[in-house]
Length: 61
Ligand code: FES
Image (cartoon, protein in one colour):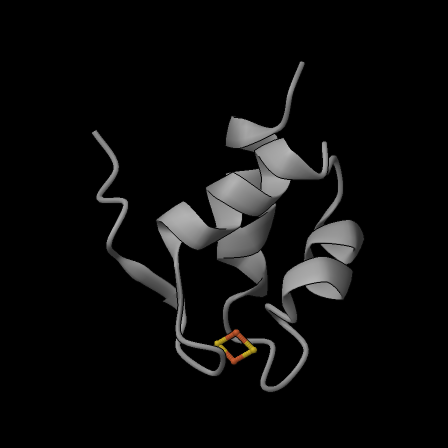
């Protein structure tokens, strides 16, 4: 099981649960939308690969 308290984007101090909540709440289906809404991935970009995996895994199908 994924650790919801794991920090995915240290630049914004965003945990997995913050990203998953945003994905569900805003019906996000792309990393671009996730970045726009949460800021994730817009500073150093190191988390981008993980963001992609998270969007794929948690977006509403
Ligand atoms: S870790 Fe996400 S933008 Fe730096």
